[in-house]
Image (cartoon, rainbow over all chains, first blue to last red; front, side, top):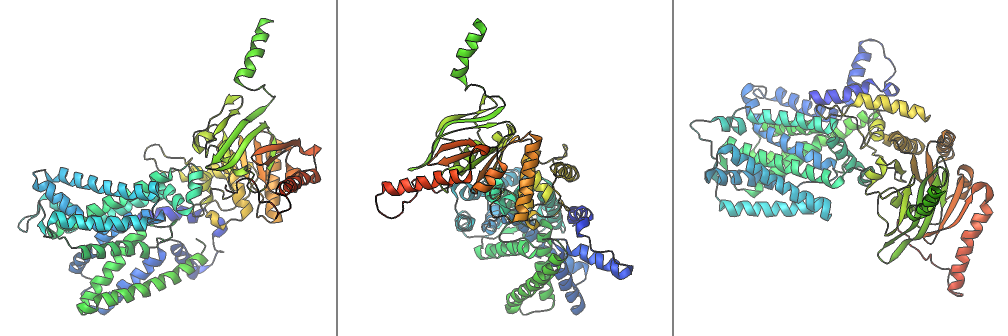
Length: 354
Length: 284
C-alpha cells in the first residue's frame, strides 16, 4: 500500500490546477484528506473493504482475533498473487482464463520432477519455467497469431486441466518436501509457514506495483491497453509487451499452485476447484479497480480486492451461514459492493482524477 | 580542372544533384497492397525549414506515402535520401533516431497516461541504477519543452484524455520536436478541429516555420489551410505527384480544377455511365 501512496502523492501535490479551494478549519482538512484519498484509484475498494470488515467486527465476536486472521490468509493471499498477475494482462486489454489451470497443473509437475529425484529447488525452478512457457504460448497466440485472448486462454484452460488429469491419473498426490510431522525449510518458505503466503503476496504486489508505475514495462503495458495502434506507432514493441505479461501471469499462477499445494501438503486434481480459483483471481483484479476494457488498473487494488473476497468468505463462515447459502451470499455481496464501488468512483471522478 | 570533372561525373551516379538545404528526397516510390496500388511513382523533395503541403483525395496514397517516409512500412521500389544520404528506415524507431517523425491522426497518445508520460513515451528518462522512471526530471523537461514551443498546459499530471483536440495535437508535435526530430510529418493536423483549436495549431506551425529548424510535411484535405500555412504544395493523384508549385504561385481555383478535371476524365473514360469510382486504393 506504501507504493500506492508514493505513486499518487507527488501527482496530487504537483497539480495546482486541481487543488480544491483552500478551506479553513478541521472540516476543511478532513475534506482535503477525504478528497486526496478518493483520488487514489484504490480509494473506493478500500472504503468498501473497510465497511465489510467493520460489519463483521460489529456483528461477530470472533472476527477480530489473531486466530481468525490466520484463518483468513488462505482465502486472501493466493488470490492477491493471481490477481496481481491478471492485472497486467487486463491492463493490456486482454484476459488470461488459464491461470486456474496453470495453478492446478504446476504442483503435479513439481511433484513428478521431485519424485524423479530432482532436489526441491531445481524442481520448483523447472516447474516455473514450464509455466513461463505456457504463458509464452498464450502470448504468442494472442500477440503474434492474433486470436482473442479469451479464446486462446480458454483453450489453454481445457488443455492444461486435461493434462493435469492425465499425468495425475486423476488422483491426489502428496507434495514432496512436506509432511504433517515436521515442516522443512522449503515448505516453510513456499506456502507451509503460517505467514508464508502472506509474505509472498505482499512482496509480489509491492514489486509489481513498482513495475507498473515506475518502469517502462508498466508504462508500456498501460499504453498497449490504452491505445494499441498508437503504442506501436510510438515505437513500443507491442508483441513483446503482451507476451511478457502473459508470461508473468502464468508464472505467478504456477507459483500459487505450488504454494497452495505445499500449504495443504497435497496436490488435488480438481478442475472445478481450479475454475473457482480462476474466477476469484479475476474478481480480485476487477473488484480492485482494474478495468476489463484495459488501459487502467492497479496491483495494490487487486490485493485489496482479494482481501475483500477473503473477508467476505471468512466472515460469512464465522457468522455461521449455512454452507449451501454461502455462494449465494457471496454473489449478492459482490454485487452490492461493486455498486457501492461504482458510486464511490463517481465521487472520485468529481474529485478530479479520471 | 580534373577534380571538378570527377565530382561532376560521380555525383549523379550516387545521388541526385544536391539542392541547397534539401533535407529529404523521395524518388520513384511505389507500394502495393496485394492487387491494390497505393503509390505508383512518387517523387518528392523537402527543403530545410520548408513547410510542404501534401494534398490529395481519399485513397490518393497520402497516408501510405507518409508511413513509408516515417518507417512504418517499406516501399516496394524506389529510394529515399535524407540530407543527401541514402535513407532506408527499418522501423519507426530507426526513422526517429535519424530525426524523422510523424504525428498521426490518431496521435499515438495514450489517453490514460499523463501529459509528460506521453511526451516521453518510448524515450523515458530512467534512474540508471534500478531502471525506474525519473518522473521529476521528465516533468521538468516537459514543462521546458512545452514552454519553448509556446504551449500552455497547466497540469502536466493530467491524463491526456482530459485535454482538448488542439492541445493533444500540440503535445504530439511537441513530442516529435522534443525527441530531436527535424523532419516532421503531420497527418491531417487540422481535421476535426474547431476554429480556436485550429488557430492553436496554425500558430504552432507558424512559430516552427519562423524558427526554421524543423521541416514539415503537412498532409491535408483542406486546400485553403494548405495555401495559408505551406510554402509549397504537392498534389498526390493516383499514386503519383501530379502537381508541385510554391503556394504563392497557385490558387484554390487551380488546385480544385485539377482534381475536378481528374474526376471528369475518369467519368468520360467510363462513357456515359454512372460517376466513376476512384481508380486507386481507399485503404490507409
